[in-house]
Length: 256
Image: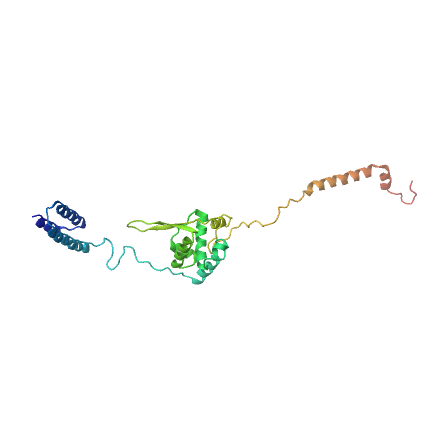
């Protein structure tokens, strides 16, 4: 009686949850002695076959035919100007992104990637850019950027925090620098590099090793000199000798 009822319930089941419930009822009945071992094994095999049928009938919602994912296939990014990307990559690598003893273990492209991460770390405290954005700024491909981050994380220079979301697109990973030498290098006052083509600031940087000059105010000295000259000229004209020297001589006669 129990076997016939269970067979009919298994045949009418349309969901995996319903089949799981019937499986629990079957083994509870077997444990209480209501069904023999051979009948329980036969019903278990029937449950397994029906579960495969139901699982094959389930189709993911929203996934187009012929595709394994809801999201569109990823297209490999390509640089519109490879010469400019190569020049930018070499410029970033040669700008001193990290201490020399640490930079010796990375290639030119990897140093360009780490320079982008260091600039974001110095500006925001964490690098939240996606891998494609880091690769585009560094002038490298996506795979090289991933390898550079993985290599630096393996050397203990930085950490990568994943932000996964169930059923939807994941958020970009958060990359943080934990190397003391690298952080000290960034705190030295090295400013982040401006993007290629950006205008230079109008204010010129301060000269190194020059002192600010404060010239002496010569206006006061000029006033004293002029006053002294006037005083001397006034005293000279008021004396009797000076008056005699300044008196005009008589024409055609002797002077007194």
